[in-house]
Each structure stands twice: as structure tokens, then as C-alpha cells.
Figure 1 (spheres, rainbow, N blue to C red):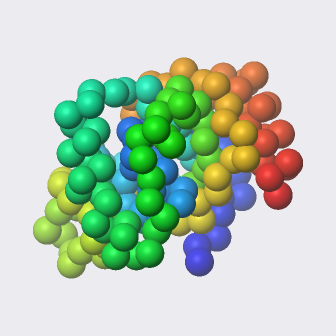
Figure 2: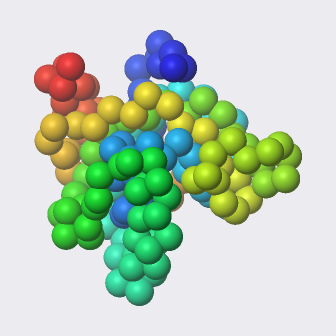
Length: 154
């Protein structure tokens, strides 16, 4: 297990459903992106409000078999859709891999770049928060709520 960043997290990463759920509950250890990052440390995980039924159903179809192979619980869009627009947990970004640069580290890796993730922690209660593209800095009032959620979670 990788060590968490000793620095207080201030950044968040918005991830579409169902992928944020698989990061927190299904063993997804790579977040696929079309851009690299040099960032290392803990980020809050934001559940995107983005919703286009056809694409989400394709994501669910693709993600389901991988999650089932790892024994992850089943997830439905009815389970994850209400969390859109909220911080749902936190995770450490411990690396970034590039397509073709090394053998695939994870069956979750597809595409150009993959943020290597470790130590996911789900919040018991989601925290409403406006998402943004890329790694974004959270407002102070949202950070205070996220820190309180971490303390109450454990």
C-alpha cells in the first residue's frame, strides 16, 4: 500500500459515473485521461454531473465485466446518479503511466494516459461541490466540509 500524502489535500478530480464508484468500491486503480499529470498526492474525488445515457450505458457495459472479474459489487446508474455534483471520497495519485511506455499495470488502463491510484476512501455522506475540468482547487468552505467528513469517517 502506498503512503498518503502528508500535505493537506486541496485539489479535486472530477470523474464520471460509473468510474468514480469503481475507484472507491470496485478496485479501479487507474483513472484514464487524455492528458498527463505530474501531480502526486491526495485528491478529493468529485462525482461528475455529466450524463449522456448512451455513453454512460456503454461505460457500464465496459466497466461491468472488469469489476465482476475482480469480485466488485454490482453497481447501477440508479445507485450512482444521485451523487453527481458531490465530493464522494478521496484517493492518492501515485503515478502517471503512458500508453506504450510500459506493460499495462492494470486491466483498467486504456487510452493515452492513466493516473495510478491508491488508498481510496469513500465518504459516508457526499459533499455538494461544483466540479471543473482538470485538477481543480476546492474553495475553502468545501475544504472545511471535506476535512470534517474525513474526521467523521475515520
